[in-house]
Image (cartoon, rainbow, N blue to C red; front, side):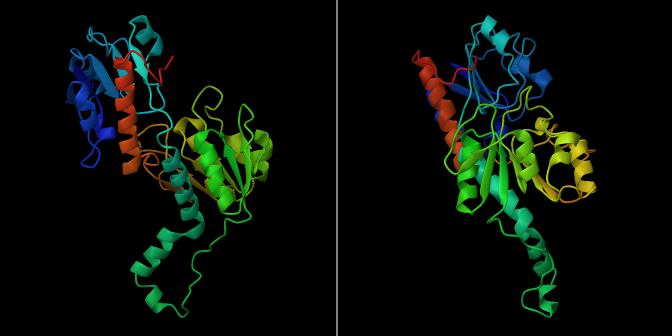
Length: 315
């Protein structure tokens, strides 16, 4: 059996390899195929494993033997599901592999904003502490998390993990979810109340028609003055220009962003160099342990499919 990986570079490195997949057949590994290269590369494939590669009627037109598509991801908007169903191609995603990693990165961003670790390290490395008249120079204001209100938009597995960390910090936790999901220590509320009352608003909902551009000029305007906006979900939940305007006007105190509408970042991305905007390159999900777990889930998905009991099937 031929297993073709179309964008291995997005998951694999010297620490995380495709070895777990090799028990199922010949693994043909492509680093990062361009869209126009996909059709020929997968023509002989029995299985395709991908992360973000666009697979549709055009890119799959030559893959006459294809029976299975496995995703190195939870989201599957890059797969034409109706087309795959019409050809009886099973599509399986990988859920809940990055919960702890994304929750951890969310607080890494929040702490970076409030504790100014990078700024103070730069202050020391530039030799400025050596010239300080006091042992604790108050160059950059610091703030405690205890007592602050964090508003979580999307109380799924990741949102709940974020809530548990927030509670451990002594924070007040509000949450908005389309379908109410009670959680001890968390106050469920409506979206407007969450925006109005939160010192930090963090997004953990999927990108869909309800959440697309949910954070825009209006919603940023309804957030508390000086609040922090955190997005480790999807770039499409926010309007980048409106976020920039809210930051440049000083209405928002800061933003911590791990996802953009176009990735990698475009040369003229409007958020580049925006005031008080900290950006990481979509790496919240990417710790070594997380990617090893992901590879194990993808392998188990294949095993169950071959056993005739497919799991994590996308429909």
